[in-house]
Image (cartoon, rainbow, N blue to C red; front, side, top):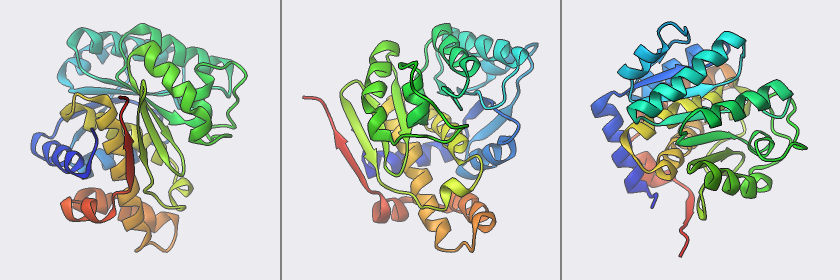
Length: 270
């Protein structure tokens, strides 16, 4: 089960192996998520052309699908990427950005889930609920409900798709069927920086390359996000300098900071 030792071990593996993480993500966050992956020690590629997507997946160790900026051609490439990853047997992380805001977004997320195996779904409470509840609503990409309200939806998704579900909020919750990890790290400045949720999904991809347990991989990514967010906030004067220090701490964070700061609770089904 997830622990500080698990997190430290996985972080060291990422830095040693420099796994290639293939991202089909949105225009708003490409630069930040690529830099975050580089900072933690992974190798990012941002490629969404349908003509090369299968070749790129075959080079990668994980695929991160983010539906933040949608178009028909991108959706086709996303579906192909999920299918290719399934054939290769590498983990897929789905970030259903804004699911519940429009029927197109919700239908796209559900189409991707039906296209092949997904190891981890990562989103906010509203996004997660929208995948099982047609009445759930999302205000843009901001959650209208906390992660606890989405907990049962997360469990349903986990059982339906045999995956882990990572629900972001003031306390992040990761579930896999009846197993639960809560991560209480983070800082109020984090929602003031565009793309940190998408960054969490990208880092989840990196952790999934070195840990075959999707619950532990998802929890590790959220924990590193929260710990580095706390450390960055101690040096930042506002959102702009926060982003700078956050990337630095992804590069610098190690066993000492993890042991000193990690705040989590694990519950394993008996």
